[in-house]
Length: 287
Ligand SMILES: Cc1cc2nc3c(=O)[nH]c(=O)nc-3n(C[C@H](O)[C@H](O)[C@H](O)COP(=O)(O)OP(=O)(O)OC[C@H]3O[C@@H](n4cnc5c(N)ncnc54)[C@H](O)[C@@H]3O)c2cc1C
Image (tube, rainbow, N blue to C red; front, side, top):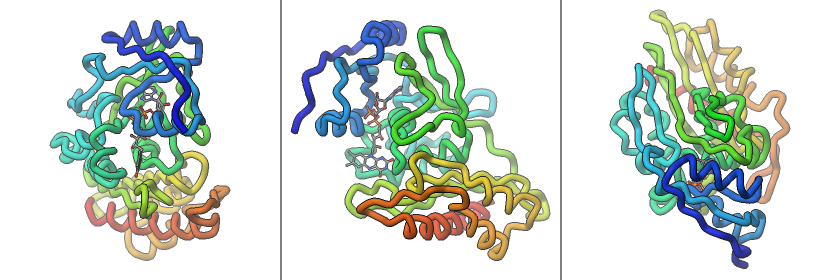
């Protein structure tokens, strides 16, 4: 099967791209790396009237520091995230996540903005977007707004982005001192998509007592979620094998786990607990 016919536009300014989105009134799609959109168009699960390729708009890719925060352009590829010296030094969980996405072709074309905007429940960056509570800057006909990572994901392939909005940049607030982070996933052996993935960020005080824990899970349900029960179980406690094990046991609490041909709901629930424990242990070891 191939995609249905569509028109193609490659604007060179954001304003032009926004005007095109408005003109097509919800029937156009932004094209970034195309590694999720083109496959679903070929399956005819998406049949946009037009593609608006934002690859020629300057200023949408790259990593820079801004007042202690790190700002990543939406069109920054997974490979650029993986190899960014700034991210490796300041937010190492993002390069670590990028490194385990798909294969080298996917990492060279796919973009962090596309991954977050696509909101595949098995996508890797969305778990980090929740754990880091990323600030997602979007631009639309009414101007700019910022959506927090924890408020962005609505359901399978559905986000808080409106059809006439473009995600332009991702802002990562600076880590507090004594913070460690890790991303652990159980990959599908064929595609490398996450059957379950866990992004964990922990901050401790000078005595090793957990001040803040932030855990994002993907693969387990229709959208990436914060493991709030795990986070609450850790704050105020010393981070050690026992407290991590007890907290990780709550990873799937309150969630309706997905079951499909790759993993049953019971297996995903088990994986969520095991990989939460691994991610927390690794993050605490890196503080
Ligand atoms: C074989 C294969 C294996 C893969 N394995 C993995 C994996 O292991 N882990 C993983 O996380 N992903 C995986 N992917 C998906 C890959 O990471 C995609 O590149 C990514 O999910 C989408 O990014 P993109 O830039 O290709 O977006 P596109 O495919 O161009 O777009 C995806 C969606 O997001 C929208 N969009 C894109 N950018 C913006 C923007 N700036 N503003 C608003 N809307 C936007 C598009 O309109 C479209 O609806 C795999 C893909 C393939 C083909």
